[in-house]
Each structure stands twice: as C-alpha cells, then as structure tokens.
Length: 146
Image (cartoon, rainbow, N blue to C red):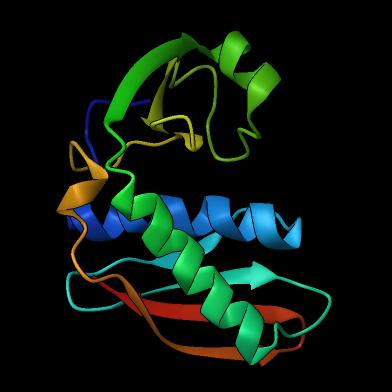
C-alpha cells in the first residue's frame, strides 16, 4: 500500500477494526465496505439478512469491550501482494500500485490490510460504546464513539 496513511483518529480507527472482526464473528457477515471514521463519532454499515435484536447489539458492544480489555498490541507487517491476495479480499488494492500490502494485527484477534493510523495497544481505546443503530433494506448501521 502507499506510504500515505489515512488520517483517521487512531483510537477510533482501531476500534473500527475490532467492530468489523466482531461483526464477522457474531453474524458471519463481510467486513464493512462503508465506514465513516471521525474523532467525535463514527459509523459502519454491514450487509445483514435481518436486523440484530437489542440483546445482540448489547452482546456486540460487550464483546468489543472485552477485546479492548485484553490489552492487545497492534502490530504491522508487510506481505507481497500475491501473499496478501491469498488471505484477504483485496478489492480496492492493485498489485501495480501496491506490490507490498500492509497488514494490521490486533493481537491474535484480527488481521486486516490497512493504510490507516493505529494506536499501539487496545488499552488506548477509552470507553467504547455503540451510540445508535439502524436497519434499512439489508443494511445494519452501527454508530459508535470512543
């Protein structure tokens, strides 16, 4: 990936990675392809067949908080495009522009290609909370803060 890292607020961006992995784990969905990450609040959209219950949303928030409390180190490594392409869905990454792909790991919880800024340990994510959710036409939107 290019040397220019997305200028996201690092704690929020790392929380977004944890949210994505937790959604994949809980709902067997794909990672969000539509996220808007800002310092004050952020949102991610997930394709789901049905709206999660209030209990499932509470479980989602609780599982994310559990991950944060594990104080995972966030690390990076670089893979060749061909290596990364065997492991990840590289929809927005081209081999021509990215012969090496940066992979961000959150302990043993999540690995994801990414060019964004990240914190060094999940303990830097303070007070993660889901503020609101909505479901419309197969899209589950999660709004959250740290």
